[in-house]
Image (cartoon, rainbow, N blue to C red):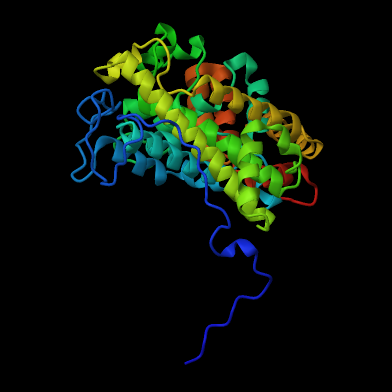
Length: 423
């Protein structure tokens, strides 16, 4: 018998058993917080969203035979064109800068994983939290926040542009897949979770979906979970991408308490571990500690408020899914570090400047000459312009640009403005 050859390359001393006993700092357990849920079916808490308590869909349709309301929502999101396009939309770095950096698609999947963990531990509806997490960035522009800021600038006199509101437009009207209705016809609860922020002016035009912003109400707990899972995911994974891009260093991060402590733990346990594996071990601990602390703090807040239904959650007056004061301070410290050292790095700023110029140039040229738009976009513009004049025309252009991927926007700009590209 031929033996399997040993892998080539130097093997780190950490490849076997750890040299010291692993120490994991956990929040104090209480009976309701960190209970293990090994089976896949468990009883939802009274304050969780459920099929029976759902406020329904915009368009009535028969119930699915084998799936619940929120399972169906999740599946419709996954099969949407907008979801597929997230693969080529930026998280921090432009899509073509490297295959290993996160995109809006991988980010959304990571948010969904964190959201499901929290939802399960708190007895909430996992399917709903996952559906919201997967859909929350469907309306994001190419080039991340640079693209959003540029579209918002151009749309200023027409109500502005905000990617959460655009995500609702995508699922309510821009996706065209079904014969009986436009959009994905998602449940109220999923749409409620997608719409994290909204101005009062825009909320007034959204009917029941916008009422909570006018009445000072909260969304359901599953929406609150997806919202904070989004923040946890992008902060910690931006650390990973920033290190991979060598825009920040391990030494830089020693100033951040939430990084410094697990870094010391990992390097003490595995002093010879390769740097790439050190980074992974540190970041997974950062996420784990924040999630476990969040679960405990949130369960305590829920127990104190004692909501008996999802409507009680909406009327609570403040979020019930939250970090402790200490964890929140650490979270803010990390955000400030990333803003100062990563998002404002000169290389990121150069990309941001180019992206803004591409988006603004495309908006301006389409505004000047609609014949440059492809037929479906022109037809969409005609419909909105007939209904809402110049504001409708501008909104149609924003819809078209917001739907672009990074590389499509770059290519479209090249096709229109480069003399060497004739079509």
